[in-house]
Image (cartoon, rainbow, N blue to C red):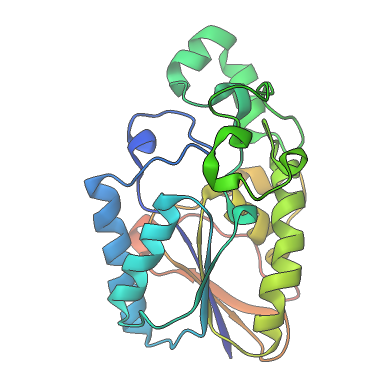
Amino acid sequence: MTHLVLVRHGQSKWNKENRFTGWVDVDLTAEGVKEAKKAGKLLAKEKIQFDAGFTSYQRRAIRTLWMALEGVEQFHVPVTKDWHLNERHYGGLTGLNKQETRDKHGEEQVHIWRRSFDIPPPQLDRDHEYHPANDPKYDGIDPAELPGGESLEMTTKRVVPYYNSQIVPFILANCNLIVSAHGNSLRALMKELFNVADEDIPGFEFPTGNPLLIELDEGTLNVTSARYLDQGRAKDLPPIPNA
């Protein structure tokens, strides 16, 4: 049996303020730190020996991974950080309070931006402070690859190829993995793992700091079980394919 753990970062400062965060590199709140540490304690009970970890370029996910690995006393686990696992870029919505955005643009339009699969938010100009081309951490990346706003479909198209090329080989080699990322980059992984339809995937949510433990048949990508470790804060999961 191979184990794959997906964990959304703990509560961030802009989560708490109900703002669209996306690629802005905000930190965890005190509550977010508690959630990340609890994730580590929950994982320790499962007694999984991890072979590798993956996370994004964003500190809220990186710190959550650190604390999860601290909780299982596995600091030695090699970790790969990659921008392809970043959160969806919210474009012109970045930094806006969600309720104020509803008041300005209407509930229906904001719902479309947040929960449609293929409709992106307004795009940011390249010179905008929230465009990743102006963030030094992305200096080594072709600016043409960096988004100024993404739909969930666009996010999926950068996350899934990375998963297939960099993470799948570990799974097929029976390695136990932990991935600390974000609500929408994890949705993209869930879509791939559970074969979720385009129109259905926006309806699935990842609670912050609550590890999703997925078990797969050895040497395959066949999911055999999936459960959130904190059942009191669990969200609905899609059906397991071919179960």
